[in-house]
Length: 78
Image 1 (cartoon, rainbow, N blue to C red):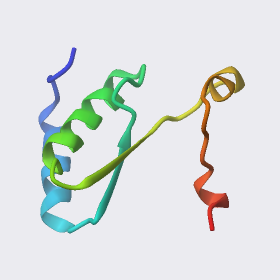
Image 2: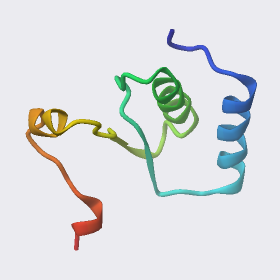
Image 3: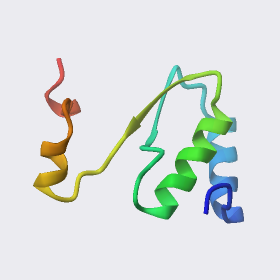
């Protein structure tokens, strides 16, 4: 259910906004199958809407990895 979050989720995002001044923000993929990940993605995009936001997806199965055209392994990036 989009748009529904617990007080602790919203509070954590609000505290993070006050404590940081990011140039780039990373958050979960907005269509993640896990409900908490979708909600956190929405909270993050609403909180830092004027920032550059990159979404990531946590792959659980090799078939999910193979379904994507581009996979960037950040640890391997220059």
